[in-house]
Length: 394
Image (cartoon, rainbow, N blue to C red; front, side):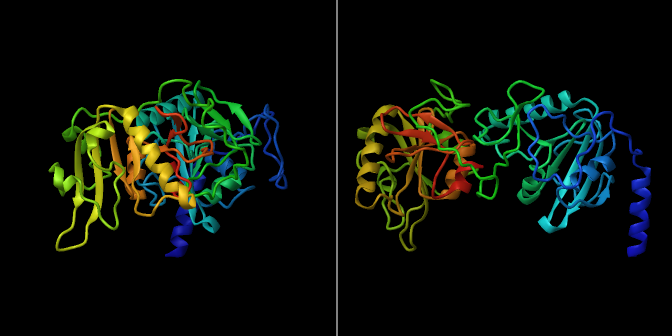
């Protein structure tokens, strides 16, 4: 059986387009993995062949068992794009076994069209609520082809090559010390910085900017967009994929519940906080311990809510510089807010365009995270949580 698979793979590779010589664009020698190409360096060419693209990337990382079969099980189950779309004429996949991942190749007849279509994919996702779409891009661009590794380890290896990562999220800024080049479409950038929400990507040694100043990719005024709902019912529907509201109540007595495990931000009369409507999602307790508590707010006076939330947050930080483990964080939108002490819930809410009111003195966010002005001095709105960078940055 192994011999049959080997013969089949050999036949498949023989059927792929033959190698073409690169006119004035030779592949770099095998020993140049640590070289730093100049900004004007030409992208490595595949000569119209996946095999030639494989030969180039194998100078930097493993790429074995190349296949062009459209139903190869190693291909991602969620389509990035396919032959016949985005000017793609060939698609293939190989394995980077040391990294326990795959490399997916796309040969494109029109690289500008490919980049335009990728940008549109990112922007559509952002409009759909995924504000972090494309921040940790793995789209490595060559001359006439693209490589998308599935593992960060493979991406770090390819970042040492002359391939460049295409990023089209408007909040992304290339950290200092990394190469930055123009893409073929406005609003995108090429770089050798590998972003990763779990900290395993390229080291970001840049000193974060002052939250009060202008941040590249962020609006000088206003917002990139925040979640909005006109009623508690709309808000419940908006957060349904992040917050478990199978147990739901607007009863004032139930909503005012506090438990040993869950502390809401709004304390006392919600009207004093600028909150006009309030609901509780989760089991408030009784025969069993309370669990999965999250509060939903319709906000009539956002400045008042943020002012009182700032005072409460600073009071909590005063003793030891850290928030209580049970303390909920206030995530705000446009006229709405959600209070949650569950990092996984907050991660989902960041994708829905909610931002966390952070009033920690000296706080700043790394490049790639959202950072916007709040309605009170000394606070910012962000999707970055230092204690939970994975939840905050994806």
